[in-house]
Length: 311
Ligand SMILES: [Zn+2]
Ligand SMILES: [Zn+2]
Image 1 (cartoon, rainbow, N blue to C red):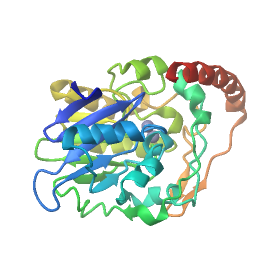
Image 2: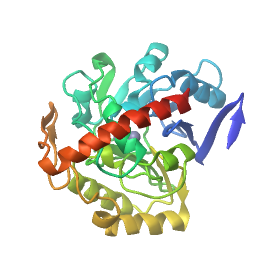
Image 3: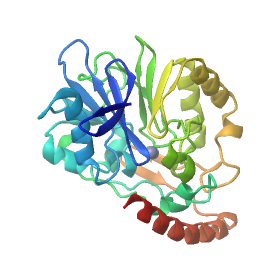
């Protein structure tokens, strides 16, 4: 852990740093060679964290620094909360996969979260997370998955849908560093206890916002096949070495048991989305309706508790 002017951040690998904002991570990747040099911000944290993200960057690169681009693993509100604020400060392009663009250009909302899955306070609170799109049309650039991102020439872009349709992960073959986004988590993202205390536990993607579980499974298998030695996810601490490879393999091989909830709105019924946004959301079935009512009651209590914790 580095402390620089009271800014607390951690090193992931050479030229890669992370910062935890209450329960979600953002990452900075420095370009070590190629044109243009400089650095890229991966994801944009929760609302209200712009000043912390700027201070994080300035503590590494000096006052007045700015990224050459912001890259989004996906556009969920906990990964884009400070984006509009940051863009007022840094006039830079924002890269996202084609299938995430509708949620950044005012065209489509994400499907509603499923508070009944995952048995945790975060799940219960998930109906309060923003699903409405941002509107940053003029800043958005579509990622070409095959050629990658100009500003990150050494990194491969891997389309890892399931948690979100245009979810991407970033992989540096040189030292097999993986920035996984929410393709999987390294903590139990449904549990406020795990999440707020950053307890290490390699897990499936945050369940309450995952709306296509078969795609999510294929994505984890794709990432496990890369055999990364360092993994930094959107939620949870960095996992490395043999521990990572063994746990990730186990997760990929036993995904249905380890990651997929027993029941829920999107279990066996996926949402469907294309480059215009989400066009099919499975209806609530009667069995889940009751749980949702219970969930909402819990959510209100949970929201009140967490608001008092955060303040
Ligand atoms: Zn997410
Ligand atoms: Zn997330």
